[in-house]
Image (tube, rainbow, N blue to C red):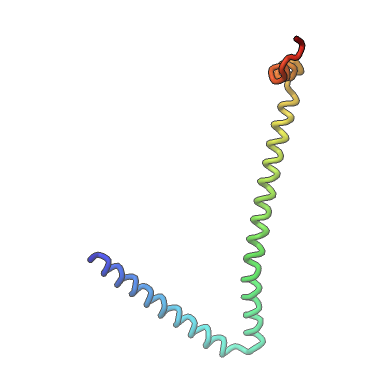
Amino acid sequence: MTAKPFTQYLYSLLRQTGQECRQLLYKLARAGAATPLPRFLVYAMAIVLLISLIPFALAVVLTLIVFRLLIAILASSRQASTEHSQRPHYLHQRQQSKQAPNHHN
């Protein structure tokens, strides 16, 4: 029985939101009818341009993030390889002798 008040609240909320959207669209339509056609076309083109720039800007930002991550990964792998090469020479020989079996029997 607790679902009934929630569904009534949800219905009321959606109905109020719909009324406000209709009022807003009505005001926009009246304002659009009152403006001259060239100005209205400029506004429409500006809105379309903004809507099309949002995905482009998002793609550029994501590309830069991926690029920075790749650079960080390459830098860390390069740093690890330079740390390995800066070890003393006798440690490299000792490590290689542990890895390679001795064939001098």
